[in-house]
Length: 493
Image 1 (cartoon, one colour):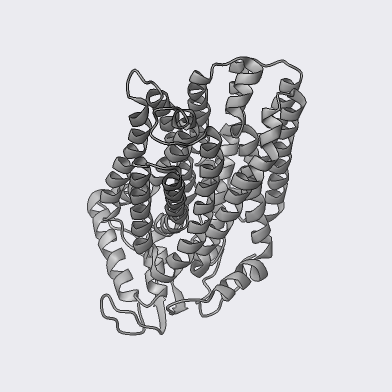
Image 2 (cartoon, one colour):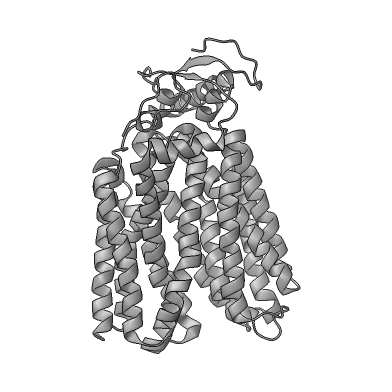
């Protein structure tokens, strides 16, 4: 119950006591939660589609008749680097705005930017145009990570948060499957002329994005953000309406919430305060976030950056069918979060995060040894990759879950943006620099070294998680990290 009066839609500051977090966390799973998942979570499918399509259609774009005077190296090098740069920049830019102006405004803006940039990519007539809108496509997608992950975690009950977050982040790989298979069709000139097929793949991303936008319009603002930013009355009304819908659907009366929190409302918190909170108040959690993101970035680059080259050079696989192999690998990636996600809520964060990281690293070490000994075929190599990435994908998805729940409410979107930018930069800039020559040299020992680097960093991140991972399963976000605006903030480490 608020200690001050409020006008709907207005912003005030003062001290407010509310049960909104406890009311949200006690909700059973309902159609309302499915609407949140579909409206916000499915954008990762678009990201997977984007990244995979561009990599797989690079050969088509560089051919005569594509409509673009561009080389294969420019597509996989310059365009890929600009997409990564855009994603890092967008995450940081929109992450700050998300904390300032709310989740809903920004997840509508970022999706709108993605749609516009992708549509303009589809009508590219010159390399500079293609490069420019690959940057802005990444800029929109990077902003999505900050706005969406923060909104999802603040709307989903604590007892489901782990599995939902993992599956949503893992859905990236459903997009990757679709992108790999779609690229096979797009490259077939018997189906589409060379100038048209690649444009249609981008157009499909626009169509899917428009469908998501229609659903997303109905997703509400985060009540947690609202009551801290002077909209306590609106937050109470929103949660009351959700409770009414859930009770009508389930046919039962919800139990009374058992906790309340008192906060001093504000409109914004400075960037300096955010940085001090993340790195001074929660140094172990900052180390954990950096370790998890960098470890998964290098493991994924060790495998996916040169997977096609490895299949072609060492196993004589035709370049025209590598998309099928990647589709199998991508589907294995999705199965990891799908099947293991619930254990992050039951067995707990620490054993599952540490276990998936260490196990995937050890399996990649084993794969490197078998590959170096010449014991693998194209099929068994793909099977090994699937086993590695089954666990690695769950671990990588848990990195996003971790940084979105272990820092205070006021810093959440910016923390997600920062760690995402670090991980994306490590994967998209440092990774290619390290692995490009190793995986393309044609020397078996070089590829073994690439695998071992990725595996070693993944195992190290898992060891960090053994000591620093936070037991966040089943707990409210406010219990995991007390909001900065709480009356009596305390360090929960």
